Structure formats: C-alpha cells, structure tokens
Length: 180
Image (cartoon, rainbow, N blue to C red; front, side, top):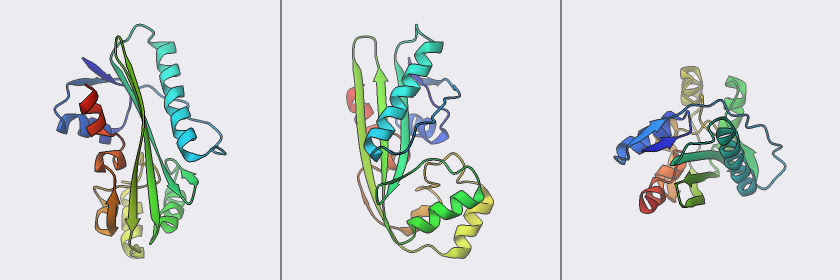
C-alpha cells in the first residue's frame, strides 16, 4: 500500500486517475522556509522537510509519497496565496508571461528511495480581468501554488505547455508510475 503524505486534492485525483492504490495521510506541515534560495533548491528543501516532519511523527511507515510544488515567475517563488489580494497579485504577475511550475517528490519504499524534481513551463496569454475576479471570488485558487489552476481558470489561457500536465497539477505521475 502506498501512503500519500499530502492534503492536496489534485494529487489525490492524479493517483486515482492513474489507478494507483493509496491511502491519504494528512499532516499539517510547517512549510516556512526563507524564499531567498533558487526555486529548485527551495522546493526540494520543502519536500525534504515534509519527509522529516512526517517520519518524526510516524517513524515506522513504509511506502510513503511526499510532494510539493511552487510557481516561479522570473526566478521569484510563489507558494499558496493566503488571501484574495495575494491571489490577484499572483495572477497579475502571470498574465501574458512564461511561468514555471516545479514539483519535487520523494517516494520512500522499503528498500529504495526516489527523489525527483520535475518542471512544467506554461506560456500564458493575457488574462481577462473580469474572469480573474470571478476566479478569485470563487476561492478555487485556495491551496494552489501560485494560484494556478491548469484544469480550471488557466486552461483557456495556456498557449503552450512544456512538460507533463501532471507536474503542473502537483505530481509527476508519469515518473511515479515508471518507478512503481
């Protein structure tokens, strides 16, 4: 049995869609690290910290999957928006730009470990401000790194996607399936 150590509904949906049997364990992680790192180092340190916190609480678990994602715009790191104004600011910065989504994953199996970093680039068209406000009012941005929702709001604005869509959704499912 695989244990998903994440509260992300997107990761749950990806695992279900891939027909990977799992059980979700939700732990309230402290993700507070200083964002003065380069984005790839930052997201990898976050996922390592999630792993450390989990095994401090549950030392005997095996077959555990950890993941975290961030959004980068011109090397600035964006995590989850804490409120509507932060979400609106993030969306304004994304409009008409190239955005990178970095997703780090650690899979701890009984006798091996996978540690990976995946990237998906989005080339975005300019956002309609009325549509942006509707998205923010819906609160669907909550829990999404950089307020990005590829399967929702952002879908019609993606001119080009370079990388796996699953990475943009929070977990490189193609890599995970190859390793399982």
